[in-house]
Image 1: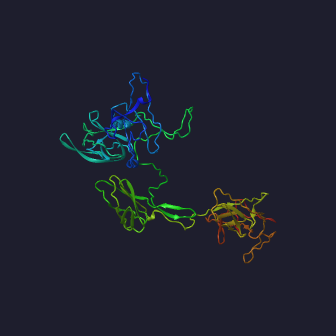
Image 2: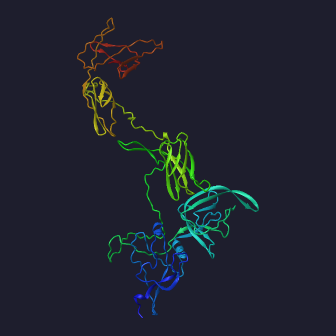
Image 3: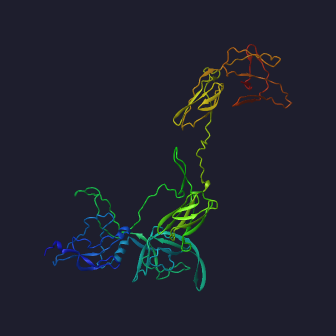
Length: 572
């Protein structure tokens, strides 16, 4: 007879409960079409809060007495769940007698057991336990944090028990242990690693005892590493992210992943954190906000069975600064914080009265800290920073000195700067500032300094910090320096010499040079030195010369002629 639409049906398995023995072969009970909760029950409030994986095995049956061959049939999920937190996934067990336990093993088989780990369980480990003790050789690599390992009992035998475990933390320590070898007691060093698991043990796993050769006892639990592999095909349904047509060769979905393992934790990014500066001190609000960390010092207490309690005492060195103490601890998987109020009182999720003078911090926690966690304290010292607001600028202003360009056009001499004509503009903070001379050799305005008009030497100290890459452009006027050679008359009775110049000199520009000579005996060992100094309120000029001896020769009508190797004296 021809195949009808109602001939292909779903049948219930022997056990439709979500228990380890659930599943099994098909029964004659058919699953009704178009009805709710025929495979899974309603989602409970507990399941919504913590998550759950519901596994059901059902079978397809053909209700037709026809002997014609069935070419094939497909099963699909036509529509995803309306609840975004619910996923449906299909897989083929290829075993009509599979139970829920075997289906779980098949789902988890993506992490297949590999080589035996370089260590074994030390002593018995009971169900619901969240930690393991692993016996290893000294210096051996401990289990990797975040990796998956497999515990196997009675491997390959009837009643085999296995469980995959993920390592959350590992704490290796070397200890001196004792074992009996050939009837004699032997002490040796071993590494015992205590690890924390992400989920508790579902079964009890017996471990081996201390062994001098680091060998696992037969018929005890084996600890194996795991490797990833593709465990099979899973089928589901997803919504389109973009509209699609029948002729499209590429479609876009909102996701191609399906959740198989419940997880109540969520990921959160924490950037630009200062773990060593949980508390800060405000130094300034304007022109910009300035904060410094005040908790660079830390201490911690590792919680174990021997020291678990609610009261602890810390001794802080160096002494803590008021308002910088922070104590953190974990209780029932939650993080709690205790801080000081700046007056010695501990507040928050704990209490106590500390002393800033002695550094003793007794604290009583509100909750009992979890075993395996730490109670940490962080604090800052008073010399950890210096508040320099209001102290003003501590940077020395720059000083510059140079000689202004001013050679005479004819090349016969130099030109001098006309007093009162010097101007030096510069930029600072986008503002134009100017430095000028007062006509008497001093610089005023937006800076200080000196200028020597005759030598054109300038010393400048700006009142404001010049901008980066700023350039100085000096504006000034020059006048030709007139040189007149005179024949000096003999000094009068008071030692004065009167001279008459051909032109009226400009104020502050007169300079007189003359040469002196003295005959020195070659055997006396004496030296001829001359010194000239001029001084005002800001600067002192000193010239010291040792001229060679020469015979002065006068030229009638032209004054005195100086040799090229002589250093003349100068007076202003």
